[in-house]
Amino acid sequence: MSTHESDVHTISPELPAMFDGMKLAAVATVLYIIVRCLNLKSPTAPPDLTYQDTPLNRFLLKSCPQLTKEYIPPLLWGKSGHLQTALYGKLGRVSSPHPSGIRKYLPMQDGATATFDLFEPLGDHRTGGDITMVICPGIGNHSEKHYIRTFVDHAQKDGYRCAVLNHLGALPNIELTSPRMFTYGCTWEFAAMVGYIKRAYPQTQLIVVGFSLGGNIVCKFLGENKTNQERVLCCVSVCQGYSALRAQETFLQWDQFRRFYNFLMADNMKKIILSHRNSLFGGSSVKMIDADLSRLYTATSLMQIDDNIMRKFHGHGSLKEYYEKESCVHYIHNVNVPLLLVNSADDPLVHDSLLTIPRTLAAKKQNVIFSLTLHGGHLGFFEGAVLFPQPLTWMDKVIVGYANAICQWEKQKPPCQSGHRSESSCAKEKA
Image 1 (cartoon, one colour):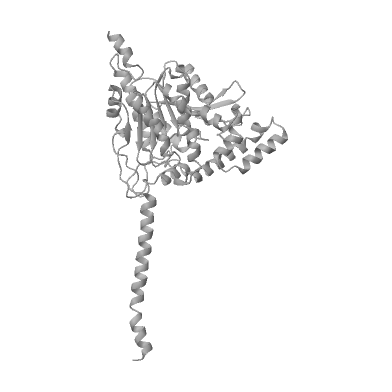
Image 2: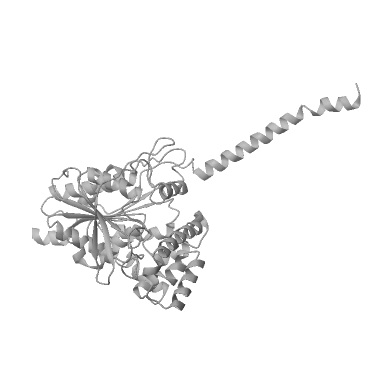
């Protein structure tokens, strides 16, 4: 046998083994990346709750099992906050229903026209009462968004009337009637909707619900004036950030790809503003319009848009002033009705440092429960077995479940046990 032939027989058995090893290494690397990216090793757990031990809170936790039971997201992707957020952002919800409502138009003092959609209940409420949910959606959202439609349909079937605010300028087919659109914390349109509901249904009681930016608006609205809390049974806020000023710095950071989300939201805001350019900039000089539009086109973050465009709608002198005046963190301590604050630990938009605000509030105030889920992303909270999510999310169930518990408490409460009254006033009555 020649030397050449001998070499061939000696080396060839090693080559397949080497390639098999490379394949195994490649597969192991891919699996490692998948496990890390999808967070597959993360456990499931009940929400982490912060609250004071009161009769009302004990009743709520007993009557609303979603707050104390394990939240189980879809196995293969539900533990990734990014995928939960992306699915909410792209699809909204799966098998979204189409609730039938009536659009209402409310003229405002400054010439703006607020709109909201009104959905009547599809059955009697379990307490026999007339209860209306007044709902404020997330940034640039409205009643036609899938996650809103899914929640409204679920609430209607449980006997709730629903009124959903359409953020000023968010609906593409509704023209603005004044040079102003929705901002981070302007409560004027929400207040107009609530006022209409109170006048049109003098016997109804209110459940206030806010999603993301809408959570900031509803908490600020309730805290701005005590009269805003009249006939309000409770408030639920989901996935808000509480302080725009504190969130400003975190939105420029790349951890959790927050800077990328900032860019995407800024791009969406650009489209909304540009779709109303004639209404928003029509009364300005050509030079000012060109300058504003030039800054808008080059903006790559929400902060740049807020500084160049949004703060000017209400005459704020600086971005810092705008964020301070429009954040609910300065008002939420005035809210005395039962308040459920819900956030997710893997929300890529809300930095962990912002969650000290609701946690501290719940530790200090008897009417507040802070619920922090391990998973859920930003307004995702999908549930499911392995791959496919269920049409209803944990978020939909927990809001209606909490509202049902509050309504039941109000119906059967002892004379001096209410979520609205302090222990000192009860003590005076007993004396």
